[in-house]
Amino acid sequence: MSSYLAATVHERLRGVFDPDSFEAFDTPGTPTTSPHLARFNLPAAAGDGVAIGRATLNGETVYTAAQDGNFLGGAVGEVHGARLTGLLRRAARDRVAAVVLLIESGGVRLQEANAGLIAVSEVMRALLDARAAGVPVVALVGGANGAFGGMGIIACCANVVVMSAEARLAMSGPEVIASSNGRAEFDPRDRDLVWRTTGGKHRYLLGDCQVLVADDLAAFRLAALEALAICTGAPVALTLDALEHEQQLLASRIERFGTLRDPLDIWQALGIPDAHHLPSLAAPAFVDATVPYRLGTP
Image (tube, rainbow, N blue to C red; front, side):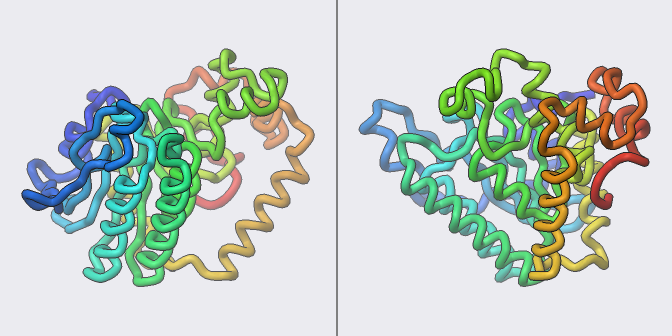
């Protein structure tokens, strides 16, 4: 077993896709570093923290991007976002089998706030354009920085979201919430609460992610293959009817669980017996134990 969370970007690319199949789109001499970081005395990195290219998955050509959580927490800036946008636009043009996004990001860079926010909106539009062109998008979330802020929204725009129990997915991180509304609202020091609220298990139970896997490169590879199978024969583009259905589901969730303070209370409200023992279960056992109670469809 090889941990996805502990793996580097290139180890993830090698573990998820067919051996030695990843081919970067970058060409020699193409500037791919951020022009904004030097004024903040921050180092730049080739690719601006995200690798983009093509690979094969069980022989099928897909386009992929892998964010590097070790570079500024995988945060999105102008160049980083432009690379993601370009990848998705190229996928729509080439009608590839799928786009697989290996997401690990704390959100938008504060140093490039406005440019980063614009970049996220452009990525979202390109992702939906790719789906409209018939190209499914699969998001893998398993890194230490999770998928927060704009990248959390982008992940939820994908056709299928795959998470590990160790992963996290949310609009705002616990530190951001605490700084805005105080620790009484959400205490980032309570790590159990953080993972119960934003972690893969809770997101899986609420239907925010479709596949929950162990923290293992091989498990993420199998889940990516499963995600492509889920997309086969299903509508790829996001329709207005589907969007309205999602809004209804969110409204019903608020009505049903809006007064509950802890995810464990939500799990109990779902009818799960002895919900307090679930956080200790490994991902496969958790899935087996909660199949009848999960919201949404697989």
